[in-house]
Length: 137
Image (cartoon, rainbow, N blue to C red):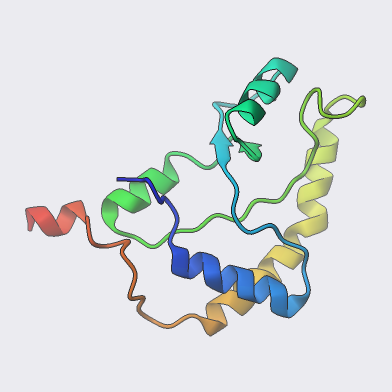
């Protein structure tokens, strides 16, 4: 079951680290994963927004599903590297995406390091409850 695909405890530690570092963040939302490598059309962006999507990317699946199946705590951090087709008047540029990644990589490293330092070695979460390996073993 991936109704809640991400570990709520890890998400909470990431949020707290962002607050401590005074980094701007949005907690929550709906990630839409599209098959790449291509940018979405303006019509697709409009449809995803109508369906409740708030962030669109190409790299969120299948990792989250595999982690849940194995009972591994997993969370997502997204950085917005470009406005999608049809959102602004300017077109999409791959250089803009690369610049967005480059501009944010050190902040992401710092955020992850700070979150990891505050995390316990074990969580009391529900991520491992449905671990397929434990059921078989």
